[in-house]
Length: 239
Image 1 (cartoon, rainbow, N blue to C red):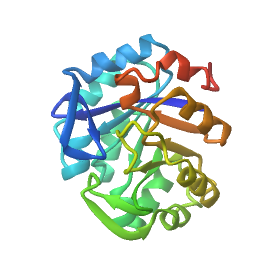
Image 2 (cartoon, rainbow, N blue to C red; image 1 turned 135 degrees about the vertical axis):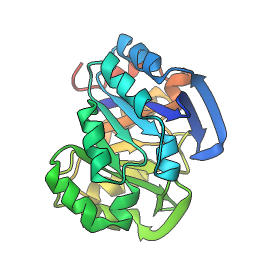
Image 3 (cartoon, rainbow, N blue to C red; image 1 turned 60 degrees about the vertical axis):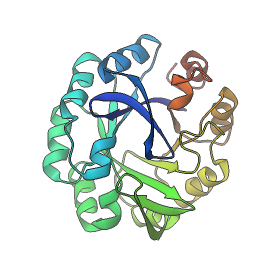
Image 4 (cartoon, one colour; image 1 turned 180 degrees about the vertical axis):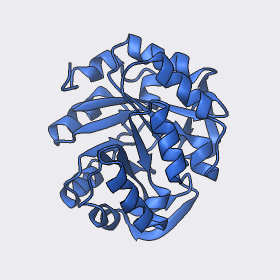
């Protein structure tokens, strides 16, 4: 199972939110690039980056923070948040981002997302963030009437790199993932599922691996040290 340490970026700083609430922010560092190098020094083989400003507004000033990360580390980085044009896709890929997570426009402009997935095969990731099983968009500020499972099935035929599934109720809460929902999503789609949200202790990582999840993202638990990266990497199939 692939382990993806998370770096969330807001106003150029490394932060974490609770349940996507922009009013419940903890700052973990002034330099996301320094944090990226730190995780690499501990053995990280890939990084999951989130542009929180971009996710919220569709516009962001965090491009340089992301580009600095890709300049300073040589491992694959994926980025989500505010990717809503082909120009942005090209700019980020040219800056060295390995793959891009798109959520809001996959729901709101499905034909555009389909075209982009075919134009950039295996470079795009479908991001499905769910609140109560329904797809949330625009930095989790809006909840749609579309079931998460339905959205996953809609794009099952595309050459996507992965599907990142986040259960908002568990994200940043340090109470464990929604294992049942992760299994449901695995059954709904043939695309490799990346579990996101709530991974709190090493037993959570073990259980996700035993359930057959191809990958998981770990955020706050690494920063709060309820999980040591070295312990999680035991389950990484590339170590």
